Image 1 (tube, rainbow, N blue to C red):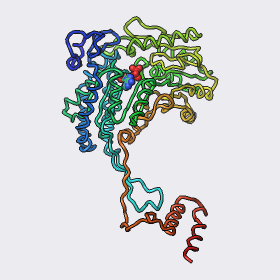
Image 2 (image 1 turned 135 degrees about the vertical axis):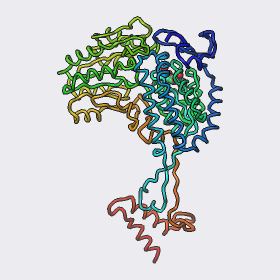
Image 3 (image 1 turned 90 degrees about the vertical axis):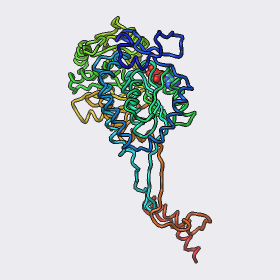
Image 4 (image 1 turned 180 degrees about the horizontal axis):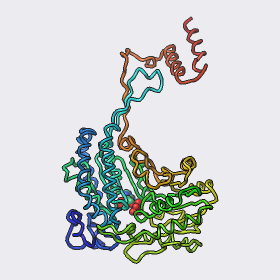
Length: 535
Ligand code: ADP
């Protein structure tokens, strides 16, 4: 992709003017292909007032959206799914244009979106149905208990640039399925795919309960100022600011933040599978995945063999700027800033004694950085302590499983992890010991394709979680408790005014009998008192 016209649809929808906007022009943001540097679109840098106005409008339509219920919403969501399937090639073009991805990576976003929409469209009805929990004690059986899930009117979704279509879909769809209206603020670096998603929503004729606003941090901050719930994915630094703003407004939020995912290779692992899996886990999307493998710990007996296999697997990756023909495995980094971070981590590691077994520098084309394996790494280096979000795999030799777990847990992050072993029990033991929101045994990324599981970060990797079956839509709802009498009601309950000690003691005694254990169930003093009073 070299110019705006080569992104069918995107140019039409996003080019606000014919002449190139000036850098000083705050009204427009240029979107560039990071591989070629070419401008592939422009989007408005929307003001706080524009955001507030869009959210006001969404509120007007949300009531009706909620009222049509999960079955009504399912129809629209499945129409959007059809639209994504029918427009897959075009969406992949847009993704490649704005993110410099290989063709295969660009095709993953629409396929993933299709899968996720199907799940939430079809299951939301079940997930949102009223619950009738069994009462906690026999005393409560006199009431029917109901939990009702009522959506927040407007959910704000703020997304980063690594998966310009899948990241919005991942949270927009469950929120829409819950019955909320959604305002999406995509990354200013890659807003074109999100605009395509909104175009699809409009083209299928769906109710106007989904809107995109474009702009940088200030536009995102305006979303936080006006929406009723914030779902954010991005850096820990920005997540912290958003959390503070949400606390100020007393609105709920869920944050998926940075990660530094460890992979543990135990001596009994299938080393070929581990090497290929970790090469994929570290280099997919040029390492720009929140759950990329960013650190590798290998048990000493297999360290040399594993490093040789990993180096081979990484060396063999084909890197370049792909077209539709799919020639490459690894593409560009999203922007120059990312290249600088990756280069710094590699340079600092080398300066402190690490060695590169393959890669180590930019290729000379755009923002492409060679897939890199680092060895002789120690735990103080920035390539281990900071999130890299690039194509590097630092490898550390460990004495045993215990050391691997200790070092893997020695991080401020805890998003996900993997463990590679031939022993299922060992795999589970390590998985349970790791301080992370998800662990894949003998695999990578699987949890990202498992909507029935929760996806959330521990430590500074996040607050809350997305998905997790029913919780994926319930999180976008306020919960309401309703109690309904089952038995005919009396004029007054035992504990109502005016207090009458015998009745009160009887009531409190019943609570105690229901909750306590053994002889403590019986309040002998109260019984004696009641007897005494009756004399
Ligand atoms: P990165 O681009 O490294 O992921 P961020 O975490 O800052 O960096 O960006 C993620 C998303 O958050 C982007 O859409 C960005 O525009 C948005 N954003 C940045 N600052 C703020 C802010 N203060 N409030 C709300 N959104 C913000």
